[in-house]
Image 1 (cartoon, rainbow, N blue to C red):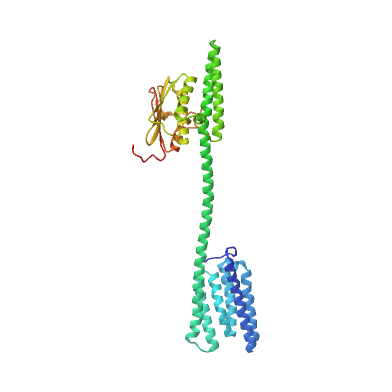
Image 2: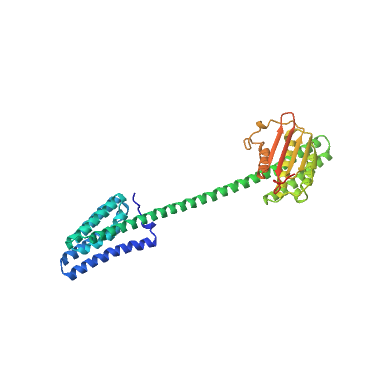
Length: 406
């Protein structure tokens, strides 16, 4: 297999070596011509042959097909070899040109052609020198053979280094491309994570708040129609307060801050206020209790549990037709758990639509709760059936306490 080295892939050192090879050929041709002129034997013929060889050789570096197409290179090398044989027949100094000719043949021809060409060139060099000296001794043979062996070893070593360099270059290009793809994938994942966070926050705050406002305004309308303006006004005031609270929630989750209830106190206190607000704005009574010794939790755990409680209670008010809800926050040695149990109608979990499959948005709340629990390596369990109420249990491991004994 031929290793084609393009000009663009040559390093400065390799370009210098190529120039040195051309200069070596030119210097040896000049030496042969000068020695012929000084010796006086066949001087015109030697000078003419040297000039012809220089002209034929000089065409090669100027023709791109010689470097890129093996057939063109073979024809050019045949012309160079013919001119060299003529020079070798006229002067024994032509033998020195065999050495740079070895490198040219090994560089331009495929291995199956270059090695036989080097062998033929070596034989011609040995024969030409022996014909001029009329002797054939070990030194006459060893010199060209050793030169050919050195040229072959250097060429094969260079080709091996070139292949390794090309493999490393391709590997670097692949790594660069992979890094770019990874950066793009990380960016996409970040965008999707932020989009999912906003979707959960909108569902657990704005959507639930708007739903509460709608219920309060309907209650106000019914109170007004039934002749109870004081009750209608109270419901309107509650709807206004819900709007104010949701506006604050919206501003905080846009800035990725903690919910207002958590900024004003602990998680148990926030759940108590949530229970009271739910009971005040709906027909559902909510009883909140704490089990175990309250302990400080990471902010992410508190936010997740509060949002899950908000979503669970909103689902109960809107869909369960329940009259009573028991909410329990349990502090344990290595875990914290939140249980929300209602006495509503219950439902078939397998009949829930996938999030986004309908225009009402139903099905997203449960998926968002599961996503919050999963993000903190927790679990969410749901027990319900038509006519049997609903029990939701969320368990989150406490960081740094997973391996402790009770």
